[in-house]
Image (tube, rainbow, N blue to C red; front, side, top):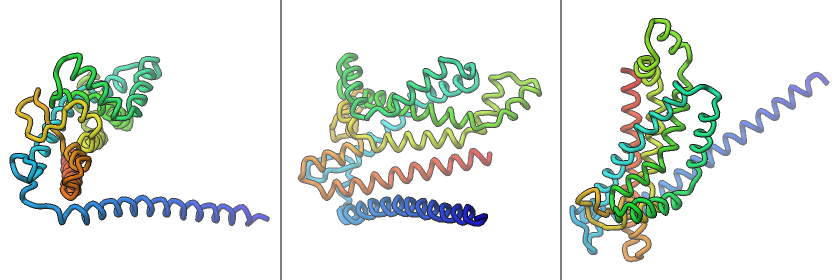
Length: 279
C-alpha cells in the first residue's frame, strides 16, 4: 500500500513525459515537412530572371517586392517600436501597480493582439487610404502594420521589464539615481534580450503579412518611388502569383526567398541580442 502512490506517480510522470515528447516531435516534424515541401517545390524554380531589377510579365521578378518589404518593415518598426517600448516602460516603471488604468491598457492590448489581420487591413483602408486620402501607398501599409504589431511589442517589452529583478532598481535608487536614470541605465539594458525577442516576432509578422497590405499598400509590382506610391510586399507578390495561376512555380520560388529572408532577419537579430547582452 505504501509503494502504490509512488508507482502511480512514476507511471503518470512517464506518461506525461511521453506525451510532451510526442507533441514536440509532432511540432518539429510538421515544421520540417512544411520547410522541406517549400524547398523541394521552390528551389528548382529559382532563376536569375526572378531577381531582375524591373518587374515584367515575363520575368515576374521578386526583387521590387523585396525592396518594398524592407521599406515597409523599417517604417513599421520606426512607428511601433518607440511607442510600444515607451508605453511598456510607463506601465511597468511609472504607473501605480494594480491601478485600473494599467489593467485597462493590458486588456485592450490583449484584445488587439487577437484581432485578425484582415480587420486591420479594412481599418487601414478606411482610415489611411480613404479618409486621409493617402490612397494605396507604402505609408498607409506601414501605418497599418505599425498599429498591428504595437500590442505585440508592448506585451513582450512589458514582460521583459517585469522580469528584471527589483533589486536592480533598489540598488540604483540606493546609490542616488533617479527613476529615469535607473530605467535607462539599469532596467532597459537588462531587458534588451526580451525586447529584441518581441521585435523579432514583430518583424516575422510584418514580412509574412498579406491581408492587411492588399487593402493598404496595394499590389503594384514595381519598386515604390515614394512613401505615397503603391507597392507589393514579398508575401503579397507570392499570393498574387498564385492567384493569377500563370506562375505557380515562381510562387513557390518566392516562398523559398521569403523563408530565407525571415530566417536571415531572425539570425541577425539573435546575433545582435547576444552582442548587446555581452556588452
